[in-house]
Length: 66
Image 1 (spheres, rainbow, N blue to C red):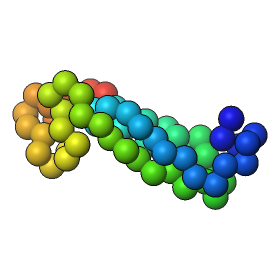
Image 2 (spheres, rainbow, N blue to C red):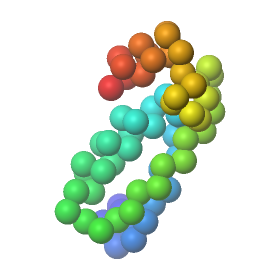
Image 3 (cartoon, rainbow, N blue to C red):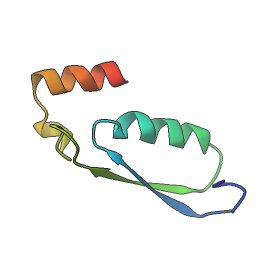
């Protein structure tokens, strides 16, 4: 859809827990295009927006997600 509508930028909104994987997959899908991807993580569950503030179990869950 992004390519077919010739969008120049997209806003990727997802839970901060899913953002690293989602961002990477979208960038891979759009490789070779000039589409700018702007991540917008939202808080959900016990994961805050700042990955540097994540602790033990949260980091393990992110690792498993990736």
